Amino acid sequence: MRFITKSNEPQEFTNWKNLENDDWTPTYGELNNPVKRSVFTSLLKEQGYLCCYCERTLADKDYHLEHLNPQGNHDGDDLDYNNFLCSCLNKTAKGAPLHCGKKKANSVLPVTPLQPGCTANFTFNAIGEIGAINEEGYETIRILGLGLKKLNALREAALEPFLSDDLTEEELVTFLSEYTREQEVMNPFISAIKYVFNGYIPE
Image (cartoon, rainbow, N blue to C red; front, side, top):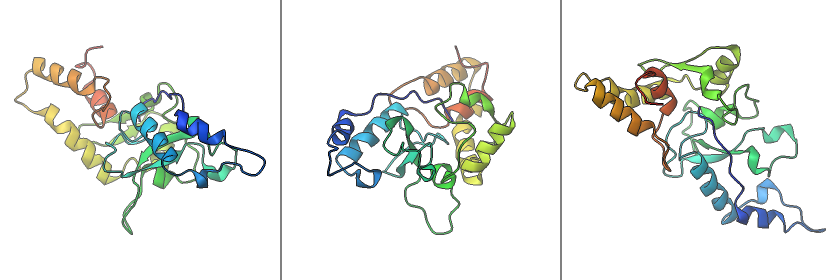
């Protein structure tokens, strides 16, 4: 989980909400394309095209609009852009284990990607396993299913190239610096890689 800095909501979304009148009130259920697409585009850009929770690459439209504060709480923030994130998993196969926003459902997270320093609540090892340093972190992992074997395997695969014996220390530092730098499309599982290779990544 990486810290996400929210941007301003897209103008198309603002304009749509401003159409409210005595006969019509905008609701989330009525949020459709092209306005919804503009929201997704904005969310993807501010998240570096990574899932807000597990840091998988968001590709092939296998993602959904996530309400950080669940809609089931009925707090009136269903159309608050600051409550929107983009989580992986759109359609899931029957019986497949859920994770991230699909597993979270109506739960409230103790640790969220909108909290500065959120990443510091979690630990990682070289085989992709995630842990936590406190109760809040462990509860967040449980709610989101971040410890699934599937996600562990994906994190391990991302870590593997950096563990090659063929890399010199100088090459490793260069590789890590390039992989973890801030860019429009971020590389997946950056938090795990930064944690495991702490000390090799230039500040």
